[in-house]
Image (cartoon, rainbow, N blue to C red):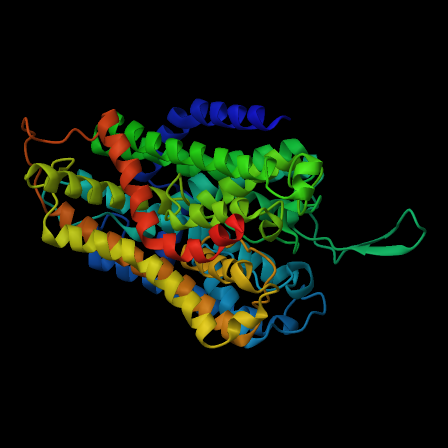
Length: 548
């Protein structure tokens, strides 16, 4: 499929499902009736589904659930050799278990190991795959809580985290994953519980092909915008991504929930046009990002790319250069981290683009939930900037943006750049950049990419750098942990502050936040903030390499 047709059909399919699927998710998160299975789960964990939570209780619930998840997954990996379906694999070392537990609980799914030779089936299914579901549900729950704060009128409550977690998992993620897994199995993905199959290759030699629950794990990986993969080469492996049309389907599933969540936002605040404004900003940034990435790869500088007509190194020939570059752009614009080509082999400027996408804060459209609340934080900053320009108290959806609100929004924005830039500096200061395959600007790009991926909870890897060491596993684990939960706490604190306010009436001086002017301002503020923050680091890495 030509690159332009690949993108156009993807956009068209998302436009078709935007309203119906967005409306369905709205019914899920705003409904008052629980199913039998949900009521059973509430009784099991001792939750009163009718009780609301203030932002502090909601945040403590998120943190407690995540802390227990990290501990459980860490212990599971450390003792996997004593468990059923371990396939005879040894226990995971302490630093890798820490990194992996944090990675999957934070919806990053960064993998410092080869999945098919490190994890047994039980660890994959009850540990990693379960977190593929619930870590994605946490992101959606936090986004919904922020929207409730914007829609509320003088109440301290943001809903109930446990209800949101259960409903999103059982009514959205699980059904979609089951449906997608069936399609993937039909396409040729492996779905079994065997340790693998011995097959005779064309050369007559016997080769062992690893088996496992690949299709089901791939389905929730894409739908929950999780990174990682059963196989080390990820979506470039034919068992994870058999054909060009499954490549397209994976991107559709990756984008489905993040693109449709603005519809939920518009419905919940009672103004669908607000949702259209947010999704328009996401679309503008995404289309521009995809176009630049594809352009840099199809018109790469250098003797070999120009002779071949494109930068073919590191690409899967089944997908081609344009579609591989599109995949790289989409998975770094979201918090997926799945790859079907190797970013370290991209041209200097082509490899810079996935970094830039993550540095945007993954808001175009971002991860499940995280993209929406990240974009709404940027909307708060934008109306504040607009208020300064005209000398008025900024308002967003009838809520005044005062000192407390802008401080929380500013701190949210500063968390990730601090982690990314400080982590990169620490790697060079301690000599741990020596694990990079390259030196000079490209070596800096490899280190910078690793921390950008961890700090933004993306999970993709630039490759060309060895990160399976105690220092790297610890440092990237901390970046993932702080990059996930510090912003979540700040988002919920902002939601609580907004929820207590009563709506201010609109006046002639109120900035309309649903019109093209605000859409352009929001897109501009997003780009300018990222440029001011990361341009010096990019200038020393990929830009310097690209201009040399």
